Image (cartoon, rainbow, N blue to C red):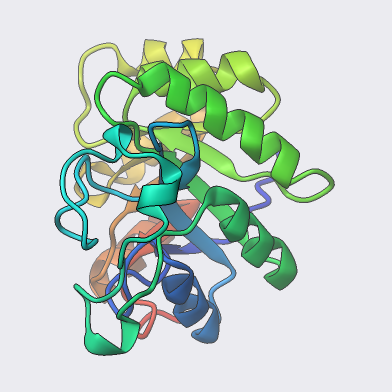
Length: 242
């Protein structure tokens, strides 16, 4: 297989349990614990701005409501994306992808961008995320673009075919290996419960790296690392030392 340039340990959504997920505050907390690789979720505003948010609605992690795909960035930028977590993070804003890129480049951090499109915007979100990633990370280690949605990865491949892609799997659905081959992925990222030594060997046999989410148990992490996994996404940045 080709050399793998990404660290073994990745902080999930920044450090999305100790600080509000998918915010610059969470990235700062993760970096403070020594993490130099992060995972985050990217989607589009109504006017096409790439920014960080996990859910298809604003309700859980911001002061807004409804679909972010129906709001322009000027409206989204005014939302409180930290107060839901705890008072010290009140008024923490939603970050744009370019702000995350600046943080990662300034601190020498790698990034796994999960393309997390709102329904109906799968391919467009992949295209925009890839184009922005290509521009923002020029001359640096590019982010790994991943998604559960093959259409999003198809958009990313069409826009910037040279960027590395990974297929995310929460189950081993029929035909996933053929889809991964068609998308020309460099890695497959699964729920840790799906990953074992046999699957790691199978992925490596295809020339693909094997990554897992979201590992918060020491025994699970130890087993997977012993089996040869290439990346471990975790919430427990205060427990696992990268």
